[in-house]
Image (cartoon, rainbow, N blue to C red; front, side):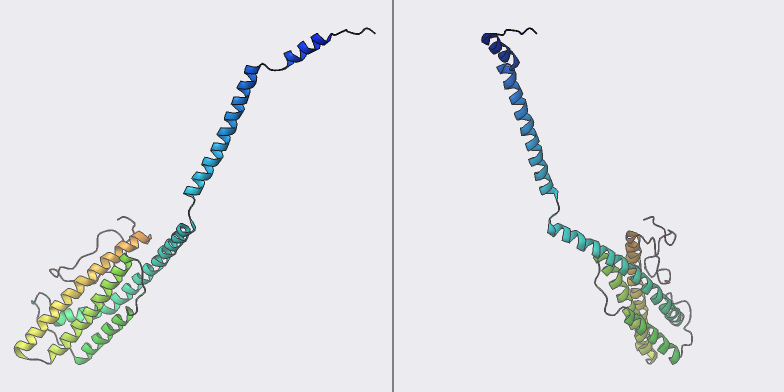
Length: 236
């Protein structure tokens, strides 16, 4: 078996040829350095962005409280709407009776009203006032709707009391007291219409759709009236 005789000078030459040229080594080193720097920069930048955009504990708590408040207000809106409907059912007979006894337009003559009728009206009005006692605190729009309805109910109760007092008077004093009762009723109906309009709006915002809980009014009393959208419709 023959052997190849390789001199030391040839071995050195072969080893030198196997090594990459200095320029190539330098290029490869720079490329590796750039890749490492880019990777490190991406990691650092990603961490910085995550750190800056991640909600803080205060922000998370605020978001949670807002969500809880919105859910609580939605429940209050539904409860308030139910209360408004039951209150309207209680007050319609009272307003019908007052409308017959002291018409707003003055065209019809007064009808016979007994003391028992007046007492029934006062009891119904007092019960309506009690329904709005000790109100919960809600969002601003819901509070406006509730406060307006509650104020209207108190004004209706005052109207009944004024009418009851006027029945015991005679002459100009009776006429003046009756006129006052008529104005109080008009103010009460107008205030209720404001509350009913606000209630309609918050129901739409809460996703319940239009809810029209208005009291009957006479032409010329200036009260707001419901829109023409169907009950439960979500069109604003």
